[in-house]
Length: 485
Image (spheres, rainbow, N blue to C red):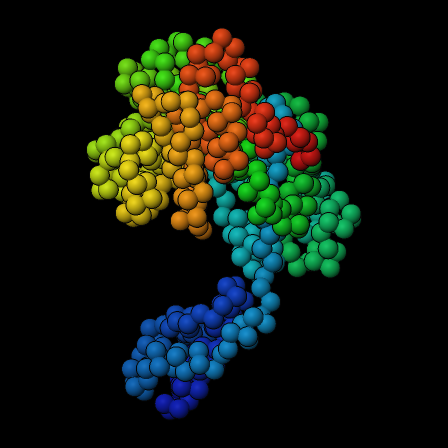
């Protein structure tokens, strides 16, 4: 309706009535998209009335009507239950990577109702062309698109006719055929083919040559992405299970987190980089291992030694034993720049230093550990802090070692005192397999071992002695994984 055909209200009551009806319609329309009650706006209400907002402003002024008051009254007449009954438009997301080499296929899928956000994006994409990324309808052959209609969007800039032929040939056909087969196989409900549209963003490598592989891989990726979108893949449990185990193929390494104790932390205290690298080379592969860039090593080479260790330990969690006593934030930043996964401060440091240390580590997304060596009352020290660290280390210094286990009773005391808080307890100081087993039985999450491993004539054997202590330590995360995707 054009504005020239809209009759001006003859009275204040008539304007209020028309405003109320239009505002209700606007709320209903916006609720379909958001699933919640949204306040009406002057612009939206004017659009429903079929007038320009400036015209509506003039009416409000002339008849002395407060739009805010109208909007609030309308909101009061609508209940959350009424919004809950509004059917939300379908909005599904899927992704899949299939194949290898230059012909590898990676697709991202959006599936949704024509009258929802996906439909709006579909129309916008089809009508707003971009140089090098021209969207096109997928077709099984010329003049035969599948249903639901599918918009194919190239991810990589099309720079030549050769690039265009790949998109307008095997990839276009593969995506269309996958959609048609998904309907035939019941993956996409047949009663939705005229209500839904699909947007498929596809990666095509400029060096891809084999049209058969391009078709083969893009068909498989599209079909898998559709199936995943319709099934709600991945589940939250799947994400949590995989996030610290997965290795991105292009990145080439994984970044572990410490969510599944117990762990064996190997303290690399030998102040010789080459000897340290040789020790690392002999350590058996295990998801239960943490490497500690020891204080003597860091004092000799600086925190840059962490980056040097990455040359032989790119997948392993590395924590830097800074023994920070002052300028907590600065020391965290320095270690972070060298890719440390965690940092250790001395529990003897002032409360303010430890607070800054923990805050900065959390801000940067790495672990903060506090070493309680020579701290008279670790529990009181922890209670004084704004936040608990990620790791609390019960530590007996080398010069204090007597061969007896001391301080292990503190493990349960810590966990009981801070019940409900998420932190790990580590035990250090002359640890051998016998004392390690006792510590694990008392609830230790991390066993820190130095000389028993690093000075052993058989490093691998020494490490395995600790990895054999419990069933959990023996279990590698990837040991029983089967490739099913």
